[in-house]
Image (cartoon, rainbow, N blue to C red; front, side):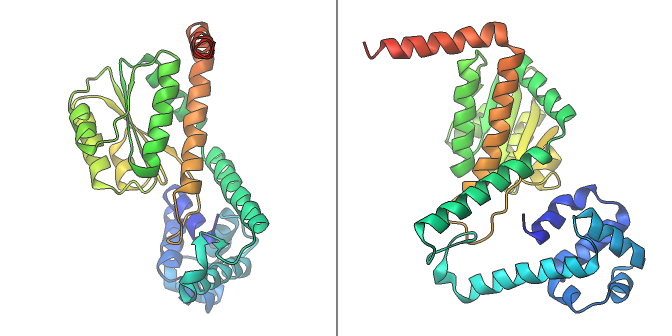
Length: 286
C-alpha cells in the first residue's frame, strides 16, 4: 500500500497528536519533503518525539525514511500525470510486457488480500457472522464492481439456506431497504463509502430497525458512519485504475471469509445443502 494511503487508512485509529501529523502530511505532502523534523513538529503543533513515534507507527524507521517514501509516491504520481497515455491500471503501464503485467497484477491483488486480512477485527467479524446467521433476511446492496461482489455473496448465502436479496437496480434496492425489519440485516458494499444512493439505502434500513453492515474502504467514511458494523476492504487503487480490480479482491476476501465462517457455524445444515445442490446440478448433465 502506498504511504499516503496507509496514513489515510490508519488516521482514525491514531492518537490526537498523531492525527494532527497525519492531517498535515495528507494536506501538504510536498511541503513536508523540505522540512526537518523540528520544523515539521512546529508546523503541525506537536513535539519532535511525536514525529518519530508517528513514523514508527506507520512502519518507518524514522522521519527521513518517511520523507523518502512520500517522495517516491509523489514521483510516481507525477510520472502518471505527465504521461497519462502510458497508464493502464494503477502501477501497470501500457508499455509493460504481458509477463510484467501479470507480476504487477499478482502483487496488487495479493497485497489487497493481505492488507485486508490484517485489518480484520475478528471480534467484530464474529459478531457480523452471528447476525447474518440469525437474520430473517439479508439484503446485500452494491453497484458496479461492488454489485458483482454483492451478487456473489448473495448466491453463496442462498446455497447454505440463508434468504438473501441482491438487486442491481438502485430503485429496487431502496424499496427493499424500506421493507426491512429489526429481524433483518443489510450489507452495503462500497469501496469509497461516499455514494449517495448507498447511504440512502443504509439510512432507510436503519430507520426500519435493521442492522446495517458496511464493507467499505475506510471506517471513517460517510457510509461507515451510518453502519452498525464496519468491515474494511483495503486496496491501493488510484485515479488511473481501469477497473475495480484490487478493491473487488479485497471485498471478496471478506465475503468469502463470511461464507466460510457461516458454513462452519451452520455445518449440519449448510454442508448437506451445498452437496445436494452440487449433485442436482451434476445430474442435469446426464
